[in-house]
Amino acid sequence: MSVADEVFNLFSRHGAGAYYGESVSMLEHALQAAHFAHQEGAPPQLILAALLHDVGHLLEDVPDDIAEWTQDAQHEIVGGAWLARRFGEAVSDPVRLHVPAKRYLCATDATYLKQLSQASVITLKLQGGPMSAGEIAAFEAEPSYREAVRVRLCDDRGKVAGLPTATLASYRSLIEELARE
Ligand SMILES: [Fe+2]
Image 1 (spheres, rainbow, N blue to C red):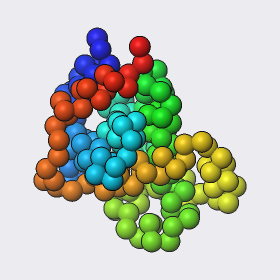
Image 2 (image 1 turned 180 degrees about the horizontal axis):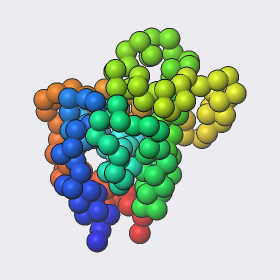
Image 3 (image 1 turned 90 degrees about the vertical axis):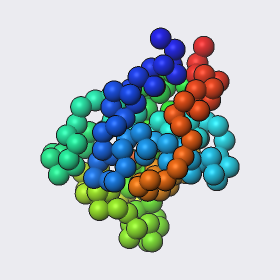
């Protein structure tokens, strides 16, 4: 099966599910994150990272209702590893780091924390809360931390009920172009 078909299969099996605690589905959320990355002129790898940043959620079963979460599902680790086997680091690394990026922004940007959605505040606690000074330094040592922050900001914006976006099918050529041989 091609990588594009793998991606489409995952979204057709799990993409209609609610995006935890938000008013959009998993598929709508992914398409909106990619839409905002495209809109800000991000490079192709970053647009694809935004589209697939939550692929870890599609690969594993966690309760739909975030109130039932007892621990963070670490979807960024699962998703980052899945992507690293199929694409280059420019795609997989920002995904692996998109949850730390939230903890980073919460620690370094005073206005960021205030505008987080309610569901995102709940998961922040499970994710370890805002970063400490040591964690900030370690995060900034990651070569792709800026890209991770960009993906994170697109992720946060991708929660608009009814926003028109491109279809998943329109990303087939981008997926095929960036997939490893
Ligand atoms: Fe997300």
